Length: 279
Image (cartoon, rainbow, N blue to C red; front, side, top):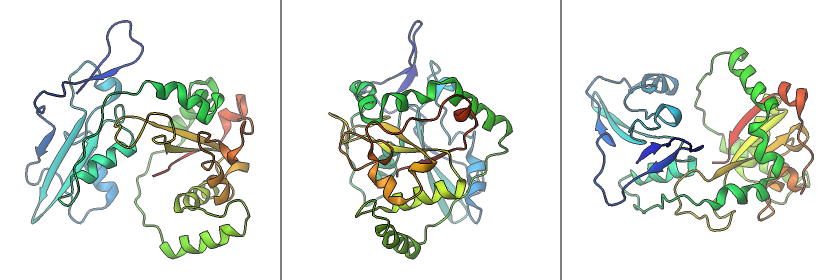
């Protein structure tokens, strides 16, 4: 499809012809030697592909310009090859990305996904995560927090690490002794550990809202994610993360409705803001 925004429209939208032919540029094969992928680090691969034809443009860079919003590239390198998938975050969330990515495996079942936008999402998410939480992105204090990080936070570094399964198992056993929840997931363990390691004062965890909001399920492609916000007192232990996800229809820090008020003003502007995803 294509991203378009007509004069007078506040939001861009995806237009597509479900019966039309595949667009050129969706599937490409790189020239031999065009990209170096063998024997190089993950950050080096990311650097090589950034801004290349293998990476699609999204958002304002693509609106009304006819840019493809998805690209699959086969990269030959010596006697091996790599396969990359790039999808614009404007039209797809992490769940959608990995659904498509996994279907590229020869052994995977290919399933049709529904690209038609469920407009109920924007309204229903407010009741699920909280009014203040759904509007935090649009506050002046939050904007200044992000702007300060971009201007003075230093260069972004890309790293890839494995998770030690034995340590996760031990952490799950220890979490049961806290009394917050009888069950904690690996993600709960990692989220609490990440908050502690980064000394987060405002932690944002992206969650998949499919099967958590009415009428939105696994077959729906698009952006159906939102976030749970935590402050330092809400993410000290894995069980606290689990509590925030355990009440159907309500996804708020520590499972409280309403949750503790979010910081605002100068406190929000200066807070150590950290992100993590739920998948």
